[in-house]
Image (cartoon, rainbow, N blue to C red; front, side, top):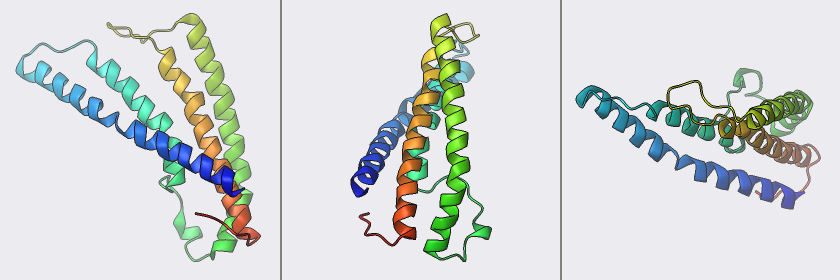
Amino acid sequence: MNYVIRVIDKTNEWVGKAVSFLLIPLVLITAYEVVMRYIVERPTIWSWDLNIQIFAAIIMLGGGYALLNKNHVVVDVLVMNMGARKRAILDLITSIFFFMGMIVLLAGGWEMAWISFKARETMPTIWAPPYYPMKMLIPVGTFLVILQGISELLKNIITVFSLKRVE
């Protein structure tokens, strides 16, 4: 179990850190558009479309990394005084809802992305870049979140049953 946890955690750690570098072109493109629009008075037709696609990649591919680092929104008021074992039991129970939701998102995201790919869908803008690569990020990102969910599930099982765990 520890091997599986390490592989999943390292995968999402690597993807999250790699995707974080997309912030650099996102900022540069935004700055370029601001200069072109307000100083040169010649706005681009491509910058916002490209920014949307870059931001989608950051959000979708960073979900597993956020789950790994406990950065998703939680209601701590209900669990802040619970011990680790009780919290792990609660997390095991609620993981059923997590996985159900993620499987629905994976299936729906894949269907939407596949339809978009087959139609070679483009964004409804003047520049009209392809939409399907961005839509393909939905099932890929969801898969990474599901993998991290499996890692968290295994960590909770280890905690509940007091098995030896490697961090």
